[in-house]
Length: 197
Length: 250
Image (cartoon, rainbow over all chains, first blue to last red; front, side, top):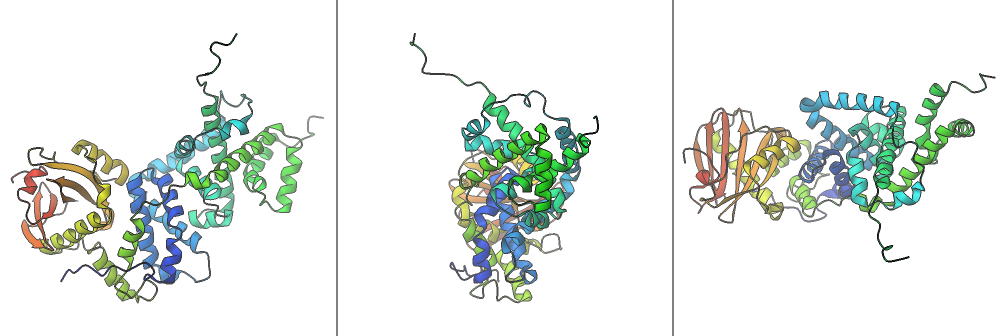
């Protein structure tokens, strides 16, 4: 009665499935940045594909499959949190808007060869700085600069006007720059000079 | 003399929004001209533009390293969930797709619809098998019940009380997930009891009658207490599992 369904071998899922699975790494990477948790990211990606499966008839062949999947990912994430985190999300966004407008005292006047310094950052430092961004900015910057979605694709995925996308990316990059510059400006131990005179 | 430039606040605010597509080389010619004209006379916005270039250059150059690859097994898990025999995703009719999903995720959408405890136990047994078959190797590091509760809360938004597993019973709590049952509101707690894979599903507010069933080489026990239903699934030959994972009365 409750037999396990036959497992399909690779390629048995149909062309749309194969095409969709080609975006799994990008979807998972984005899910990790959204959830900040590997298990939750895995569940989010899995749910995204299941919802894509159920909604497949609404997908128009020849249109942008990648953007469609990111839209589902974003909606699934938002819906999963809607009841338990709505207040925090809106508060988060408004507060940070104000914080960005107010500037970042203590770091704006430090002029250093930044491009060189930023290059010295470790990937883990960058991920941590991205993860520390408020969600609205984190998602927009990530989709643009890492996942390489166009402004219009991001606007569609997040269901916001394109001007809002531009504003979020601008503010997100600004916050990220401040965070990374603060990180690289932190004094580090110097070595190699001892014994020289 | 004092009105040589437009109001810096409103002008800079508009330019700040236009900066991302400008530094990405994707601004319209009209917007690009607007930004360029502004940058020639505004040092603050020139600095902002430079910061935007630096952040974008940094992120785009590290794309491959920043984006964690999907864990091994996730693709096969999705394929297993999406696949229905040999029919394939694309060729499924809506009805067949719905039936396939119900089978594939073992009745994920049945929870809360008044099904019998026997059916519930059978479905959760299948989910237990699926989880451990597909990515059981991930669940090898023990944690306390307190840590598991925090993880369920922080990562899955689930507030459940978990009993402490019994060391004497040889039980180790090794993982937590939100199960697909009940649209993700069911906690799935994974244990190793005497080295064997054991699951406990926690269904808050679900009132099921006590039942023990044997299916697919596993033994499933359904227990309700305090308005919460626990379903424990273990290999048939293991005994005393409910007590081992810390459930009372066993």
